[in-house]
Length: 443
View (cartoon, rainbow, N blue to C red):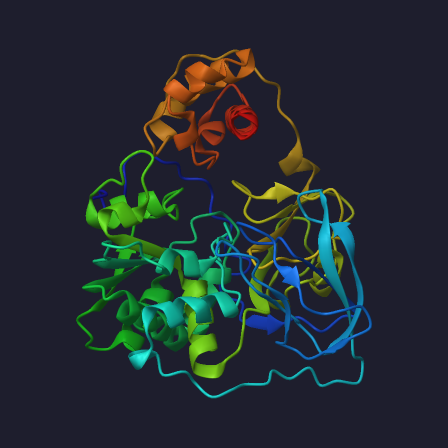
């Protein structure tokens, strides 16, 4: 509990929020553009498998790639148009990956074709999980893990609490905030659909206190339902991480190496809940998402409803383009997002923001020796020793890193943010974790 009487977790940091440019801006629809590129592997797990051919006409919302295995999900056409290529294209992470390219039909109104709602109340769990996979739903908080995997409970497991993440603790981002404010009924409807299927005792939506309007409209949408509640939380980073959110709301910890399911909880994002309602009530798959376009280098900040596959450059142009002193564009938030090497890459299902930063924000300060001040320890919400992990990473001592629980690091960047010596702690840890995973894969 914080000094203000609000629920929170221990440690963490308080970066400047920088949300004022977009937090009150209503969601605008991104105009349709000429061409869309849809990587087959834009979710966690195995890439989807194309079910269309080059030259084929497709309709908006039509299946274009089927899930290839259980930890995989479907992909749908974001526009009416024609498949112009199934080939390797540049992914935002820099890799060349298999993708489907669609040229939009310039004469189509690009309306969404809705279907009859599904009766979720009588739907068996197996069918529900299959429907979520068919809808192409992923976690919209950034990780983009296939949503249906969380809902397929192993034999003997149960869920007591459904936890919904409305924190949006990353600076600049307001896409979840606007979704809660403008689509509260859809968010709550998605929560109720999932709660019924999982058989939970209660659902809790955690919302940071800097979004009082979201708290108000969600409570109004819930009404007098005692099984769904909204809990205001202290503003702190990284409260949106599922383990931190659980600690903040319930005061319990998810054990190291375990998942929320191990303590009978499931965590999802508010945007995922709205998309769940879209599929079961209107039969509309995940073909577009809200993206915050902001930062000092953006001429006209906005929250845009963007079709998946839209080129980043086109989205930035819709927001007035970049200022002349822009030096970096980040996909996601400034703490955990990735810098883009090219603007000719597509918006993905997991793209929460596009942030443009100038020379002032991207200047690389001099790195100094560790002061042994302990600020990184106070910042780490997982109670690791980031300073020690950074030293071991520099020395390449991977066995010792594993013994020091490096794989429990969620790479939130709070340690780097807190470090007065400007040591790139999280980057060092991230590189070592990648090397450890590669070694494990070879063995």
